[in-house]
Length: 340
Image (cartoon, rainbow, N blue to C red; front, side, top):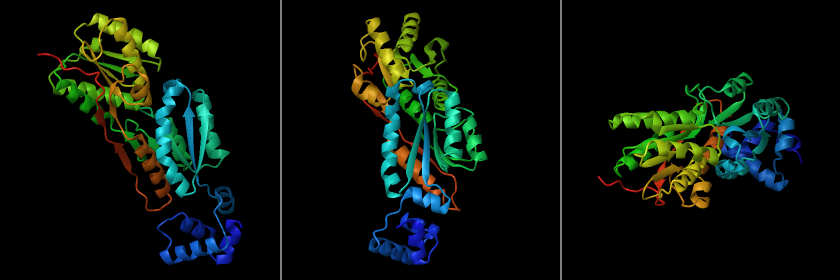
């Protein structure tokens, strides 16, 4: 039995039946119980595709995975799957379909969003890797697509988002290093047109200023790609030029891998001669040698909150929301205390 026939048998609209089975609060408890009871009687289970065709509305979340830029290295997808694991239970309980596409360059990514909207009729999308000013937001708003951003733009343009607390994370790292008497702290960033990288850069600069430490441009480098070997060359050059550096903050796991290589090539003992701290990932928590002290976030909660926001957007009274995943430091022995 399809939803159209089932609704007709109950003398209710398709929308009422669909929302009752989906657990939406705008359907009375009495009506919901009646629909659930009849669904069991007729062994009816909602089919997402059939519901979409019958009602003319999609219940599908779209996601475009870019395989270039920050995501050139496939290991970088690990954080994405943590995010997905947080979404999974909610997707299943709400009978929401998940449609994923891949893009090898910016043109393919643009085409992927157009296909999601115009061909697959996806009405909900999750954005990620947001730029300081992101044109994709304009595209989705123009097409009346509900979306949640995994990340933020420089100016929040009236939309819902989930994100790591980038500023709070850097403040936590800097305070952690200051408490261990570090003052010559270097920072290795990814390109700052990604807003998370810009936010982390600004927090680093503000923290130095707050603690009356003058910014040294030789203690800051930007790595354009997620290639550990390239990061290693730049970090080695930086450490050779400025021997007073006692700690390295790596904005990504790949620059952390590069930092390990650079320190090893200079015979610097990590955790004794030089300290390394980074943002956590399966790479630095299980694959690096040594394992790196890192600031960690619950990425699964990002996914859960993103899906909950998207589902709530079907409510006409929905107001934009945000969620920041709070950081904590995981000690793994790569940060030493500097003797005064």
